[in-house]
Image 1 (cartoon, rainbow, N blue to C red):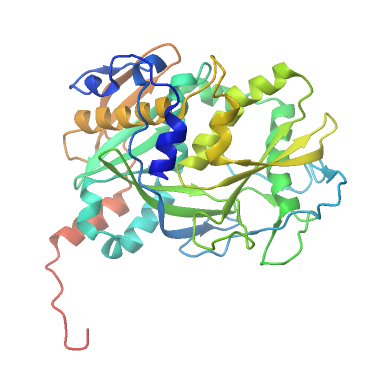
Image 2 (spheres, rainbow, N blue to C red):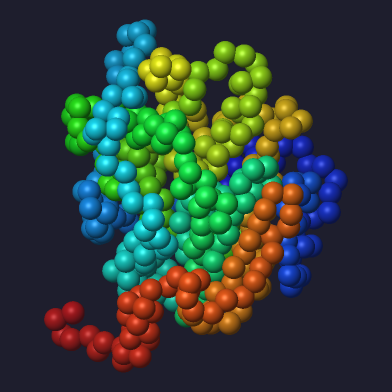
Length: 397
């Protein structure tokens, strides 16, 4: 992925102040895209370390029970005609968004596998642990014009943990979400029901309940520049017909968007939505996004597959488009900024990185509640490991 990404992503290299000159200890980090133009940084091909599932009650299971299988409709030239409004709101069980899950489910997985991590337990000490969605927000930051973010960071046993904090503006937006937006969210999940089966070669069942508590998550290892990464992200489905069954290259991302009828609508879609789709799929190495385009009545009229590595081609010649190199260089710069800022090893000490469009990233220090996000059960279990004498192998081992 790194070599291919380097060639495709860099585009034209303009004369600009190299972004890596910005990595001196500082109290803020600029986000202007012009500062991050340059060669595509090294990004290690992501490898899947494991997975876990969340059930209908949002309970954690360290297995693949929630994994679903891609089942496209027959390509007979007819419109798929999926009714994305079907079952709303009667057969809809949305996740309780008031519950702040932070990194908890990922930490459950780390705790289960800490002794068997690829690279040994010591590898974790130099790594950054977070959700894929948090990294996606970093990648899109140089081009984001509307929504700010906050990321809490703590260092514990050498590992840097990053966890998103809901901004006051995002909270207001969530609590006052209009019915039309709630229905649009439902439609995205309903689309998955039309294309996913519970077993390879099985059939889909759009008559069931849409329960957004259920999730299958992949846990991946990668490296951006000199930053080892361990991150997890939700996976929509696996393609049993993929050329290789090796995750993550057999995974498929499913998306919906409204039908486009004008050049202006297409340009806006390529500049904004495709950027987010690319960032979300490029990070974990998911090769394809299957998009369903819906009409105003909520019916999917057409399906189109976007290859992740070719998405940049839609904006390559657009002066107001996005550049993958800028996205990845900014993310690498932020990770260096965070590593240089969060120097004290203390799970109760939190550095809050805040960003609003048009401003640089700033940082503030906090201790304990409400910002501390590493749970006591995790800290105590990891500390106990450190205090326990190494196990002496028995003759049976």
